[in-house]
Image (cartoon, rainbow, N blue to C red):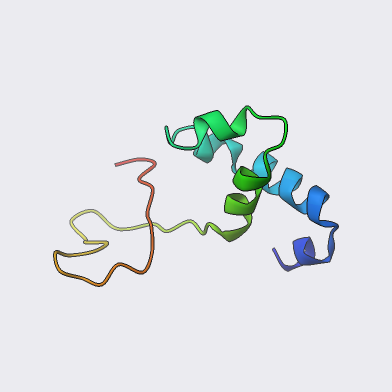
Amino acid sequence: MQFMEELPEKLRLDLAVEIHQKMLSTVAFFIPHIKKEDNRFIGWVGTVIKPLKVREESFITKENDKITEMYFLVKG
C-alpha cells in the first residue's frame, strides 16, 4: 500500500490498525496493545506485516535456519 507512506504518521498507524485488526486480534501477544488508546506499536506492526500463504505440507522454516523473520500462524 504505497499510498499509506504519503499519509501523516498518526493517520497511517490508525489505518494500519483498522486494516489488520481482525488478524492481529487472533494473536494473544497483540491483544493488550490493540485495546490501548495509544496504539502506535500495533499500528507500526500493521505497517510492516505481510501476509504469507503457505501450501499444506510446506515448511516456513526448518531447524537450525538463521532467524530473520517472525511468523504468526493465523489459520492452519
